Image 1 (tube, rainbow, N blue to C red):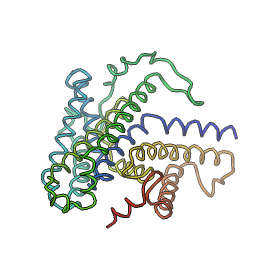
Image 2 (cartoon, helix red, strand yellow):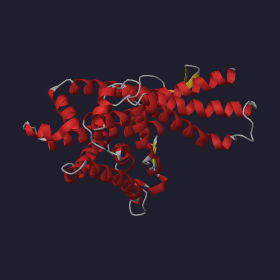
Image 3 (cartoon, one colour):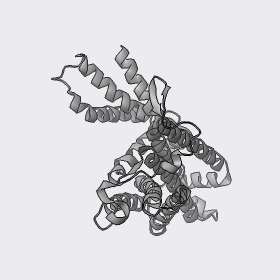
Image 4 (cartoon, helix red, strand yellow):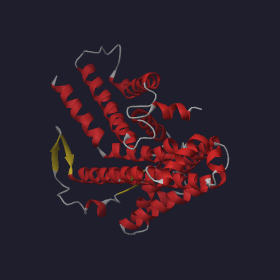
Length: 332
């Protein structure tokens, strides 16, 4: 029993840690693009990679201040959104989906290539660039702090605190935008862009704004992840993270301000609890080794999550906070 309580504490830490912040910011950005505007962006991780590498390259390779690296990462995300949106947003939705997923994988391969090694350090990645950020912490970052039955390092706690502040500010921004005329226009575009165009609205510009805004939020998530791990490696930014963000959005509920945040927290809680819980049950002999070994847990936990998402889509397709009427409209 005590071991399961420890597993629960570890899962709570995962659900509140900087990795959950990373996934939440990615999902919030996708919520702007897909949930409210109806844009299929399958390359959100590319924006996160540019955000993380914007800081890493600026600080460790060019010797620039930390805040300059933040600006570089955000500008790179804006440029990528423009490059992807300019040729595709006037076409059908699937062209944007193809372009974004190809761009994400192409950027990852470019950053790990031999030709890019002088700048990105290739497959070795960059590290040790978060010292200036950690120095801003108002507490002792060399200490360990007991929270919720687990121990947090001072640096980890600082990154997580800043990350959740960014999540709160992002949610506030989205809430204000959705209640504004801009929000009403993008939701109308999601339902019937031809009708919006007939009313004199420039659908292309609104789509571009949503793509840029979602990309910037994804870049912020990549920055938090890079600062939390104190490293930037191309293989950290694989397309699977984009689909995890979509899963978090579906779990929490699309077109809802808090949907992606709650979904991201639950996603990491479930992943970690399934991992530690199954390993504990196997170690105690509750689950026979012949039925499930400890080495198989890493794969089985995602199978369980997939089954849970399938059941969610069957019995509650709108997610935890979603509105079934909006899901029905989106399916037309």
